Structures are given as C-alpha cells and as structure tokens.
Length: 296
Ligand SMILES: O=C(O)CCC(=O)C(=O)O
View 1: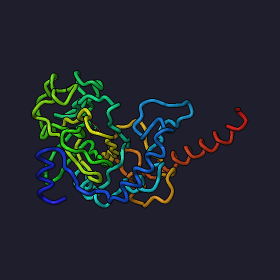
View 2: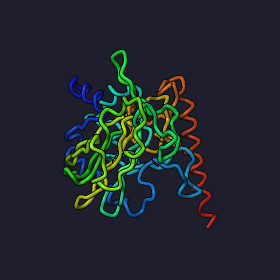
View 3: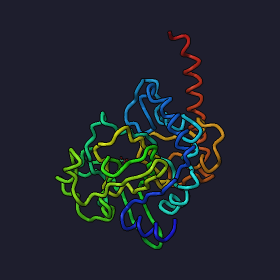
View 4: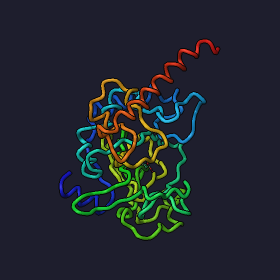
C-alpha cells in the first residue's frame, strides 16, 4: 500500500484496487456462483439464523466450500498487503457473503456504520454498537474493527448503482442525520454520498466505520459482488467461525486467517484448543452422517 493509497484511505475510508482479480479469476468465481445459486439458501457464512436443525452451531457453511478461487480470495496477493497495513499482521477472516443487485432486488440505500460506532439507537439493524466499528490512525499505524473487501464480478457504470459511502465519515464525531440514513431512490441520495463505479475484477476496500450502503439498482443485468470481511484477531462480528479442517490443502497462512477469534491470534500456545474444537466438529459430522441412514 503506497503513500497515496494510505492518504486516500485515511481521508475517505475506502479505496478501489483496480484489476484485483484477473479475467480468468472473475470467470471462475462467476461460474461457481451460477452453479450454486439455485440450490443454496446461504450464499456465504454471514448467518444469524439456522436454515435447518442440523446446521452446525459455530462452523457455518460458507462460500469457501465452493473451492478454487473462493479459497484463493482468503489470501489474495493483490489484496493481502492492504489488509496487513490496515489491520496489522495476524488478522482473521470473519465472514463472507455474496450480494446480487438486479431490477428485482428492490434495494434502498441504507447508510450504516459511520462515526465511531456501528448501530446506535436509530440504526435500522438495531443498537449493535459494542465499539467494534472503529477506525483510528496513530503511531504510524491503522486500526480498524472490520475491513471489507468487495470483489466485483460485473462492471458498474456511473448512474447504475453499486457501492456508496460518505467519504470521511469513519472519522465523524456526530451521528449521521437520521433523514440521510435511508434513500428510497437514487434521486433521494444526499449529495455528500460518493457512488463508486468499478470494472469487473476491481475490489473496493472499505472500513466498516465509514457510513456506507448500496445504491438502488438501475442498471441492465446484475451486479454480483463477493464480500470477504476481515477483523483484528481479538474481534468477532459473526456469531459463527470457520473450521479450517473443512477445506483441504490450505496454506499455513490461509489456515491462520481462518482461525476463530481470540486475543492470542494464531499463536502456538492456543492453537491446540481450536484444533480440538475443530476435531470435535468433524467427529460430530461423522456421527451424524453415520446415523442418518437409519433415520429415514
Ligand atoms: O453494496 C455494497 O457494496 C455495500 C454493501 C454493504 O453495505 C455492506 O457490506 O455492509
């Protein structure tokens, strides 16, 4: 991350990384998405409900199960240097999901995050501010409670929709005016909002502390965006974690990035605890599938 990019991220709270993905990666990600689209309730690990009583409690199903480039996104060489700068070494992947905007999605722009907290009394998703939505730069280092990487599979032309945010709001001291939080149409969007156009293969990196959301879609076709969201090791947003054992052939660094949260990070001294938890998960899965044939 060069000085210009650091300056812009500190100033605005987001950056666009052009060509973060190659055309071949975009194609592979899109093909795997289309193959799973009809038969999967959860397009990602970002769940707060169970879709069936057999869902595992903490190791949520995830897009990582689609393999190939979905595994590569965990630790992508074009993105990793930004995450190391914005989160420090030893960060973790907290959750992933995919969002599809189309004429049927009928979304409103709901600006969330922002200021020095998430949620708050008037937040539409509830008063979730536990201080986790922070941004700070001090002693030559960035500190972020959650950094989102939005991988764009489709080009978003100006005026069609896509990612939007209030640049600089990650450092705001006052609450976002409530009548600016929700825009039903593009025409209602406050002037202080940046609408970000991208090409397929670009990635938008933003701090969740910046007030952001999705512009109501007006484009032809769809906008398909894959979100991977990263935290410092001691922070957790999702109630579910990854189980590295579910994904074969991970690199050591990918495994470390999938570790569940703790102040110890992927340290050797605590690794055995999560390894035991992950082995117990695998045993539970094995016992359940052995029991299943007799239940019919
Ligand atoms: O559509 C977008 O890029 C914004 C998504 C968003 O609001 C979020 O991930 O919290």
